[in-house]
Length: 444
Image 1 (cartoon, one colour):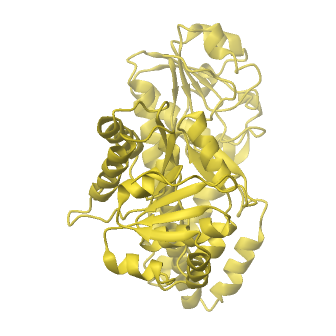
Image 2: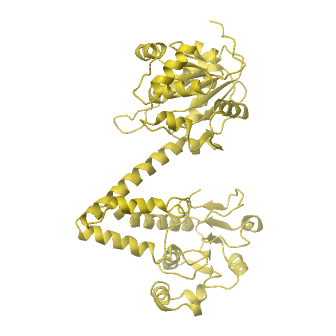
Image 3: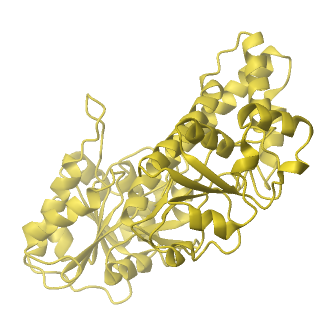
């Protein structure tokens, strides 16, 4: 079957898989002006689309399908070759269900990739493949390998594969598609990225070009975060109910705070939390739930998660088998000398207890100025702190084999380039640090 002439006004798209995501994509991309060919092996789904009906029950989708089938800008087929030959972009929306053992079943995505690859063997034009299905990190690479093998073409030359995760909620899928927070395009060659940008041109949302792996894991992280928020809120609700408080009022106040609560402020990978407030208030909330016989496994687990992160930092530092360790930053955050429950103090305590020689620089901490509860705490945890503190940053750097950065001090951005022989352990995410064999981030 020879390819149909491509429209000069519209990008042509083939959508592989006519389930929930695929059906929404068919209707929405057609609404944005693309000519769409849906592909599926299920004849019931094909018949529904070709008769102008949606394959799912979802607000607004049925109207879009009917409208664009009637105008001829949307049709469905069971011929994968026809779908690929007559389009510029193929979007893989096939299902990725869980197996009985809980693993992800990627067989359908790999089958779709094989069909696209076979079709591309006899197609001269460059073709873009977008993975819209929710897949594990590494799937893009495998899909690329399958298409290369089946097509005989080279990725980045005859075709390109990009990761383009969806963030659609049932009952609001069309609105979510048309008004997303952002559009994610994971890696791929330049021509493939430009093709994908073209099909989203009618949507007013930022396009974020990211690494393939970040795009692949993002949907899982998002959904885990959504599940966490729901479960956390319900735990708060149970506590409030038992104490005679309206949880709806409490949570409406929580989300009304856009400066700290609903913001990126606490959402940056780094070291553990600390200070005088978070540990104390978390313990208090746990006590309230315990005293009222309310089970709160998420709230109970927060401290254990924090402790495990400190242990992770300890293992990272000790893994280099070097005994001279310099610590840049000791208080729990910049601009304060508060050492109470500082995760860095706990890290230093563990290192000191294992016989490591510790040299510390912190411009905020002056041992003679420590007083009150702050002094009592450090005397009980690190009684020899005075001999560890050094007033000169350069001395700490020069005298250490491993440098652990816990605060973003001035003059650290070129630490790696100035001291390539030193092991740098970054717990805060220093700006401007280039990749280097001796540079190690705790979460990156």
